[in-house]
Image (cartoon, rainbow, N blue to C red; front, side):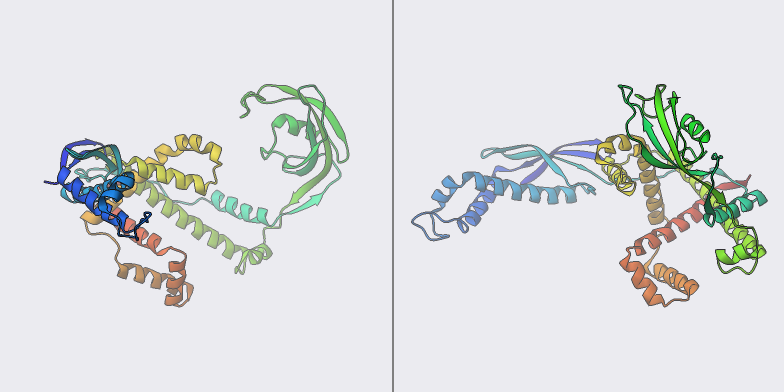
Length: 414
């Protein structure tokens, strides 16, 4: 055979294949490459494409060899992928390329392949569903948070209290003990925006007053060079504002939306929190079952997929280039878990024929349009433009996979 696999190495999802191409095939590839080069180059005394083959081969030997090797390796790749029934998920790399006119071409092909999940154990698991009950305290907290969004800040001419917003000029002494010109900061006292020792200095001031005082940085301060050190700090308080919350009444409810009364707002908040609680309880059960499936069915994960997901996380969180390595170390395990989760869902969807169809997506879009009172075609076009149809498809598939898992296993109520 012109193309042979001399050896195979498998480590996880990585494949290394030693490939040999016969000298006859190499010679043929060189002849073809020489003809192509001859049609492209211009040599003194000859028209394009009319130079003697021997002259072209001698003058452009390196170009011909490189083109022949490239062609041979592409042909070998296509042949080996088919004969070895590989499903590469990364662009293959060639290593240790050796060409000899007498023995032919040899090289090592390295790639990652899609893992094969057997998932032999999918039953016998137990998950506990949390109680999705919503308390009055949670409702009050949510409404207070909504009131806080409508709060007003009024200037006061007195010492600040916890919860007040202050404008303060702060300056910290340098290594030589000199205190530079201050910089203005706006701080909500007690919100953790400044170290407690500096807040104590501010709490002793009235608007317009200044204090210079030695302040000790906390021993657990994130910047290790500053942790535990004492420095002179100058603080000049320029403004104090106190928050005023709107009354909890029907007027507030009308301001928050289409609510006739405070009772209507409270009812809507309760229903919203109860819906979230149910969804969170469902997510807890699904996550627990999926974790048990993953633990009971070990499989290898493609490192390239994990790296791609970490990169996507870093872009989403806008991580600076200099912090990427540290970020990867922190989120690598999370990314790997997500890849495992996706592979299990994909495998189950395929095996149990649970994957969403085009019809399923169309029906879901029609349902969404109906809830909005919008035209189905317009909603579909908007989702397609935003690239969200794939997201809807995945959502339907995941829902079916989890429904299937729930039927195979036991769920208890907390």
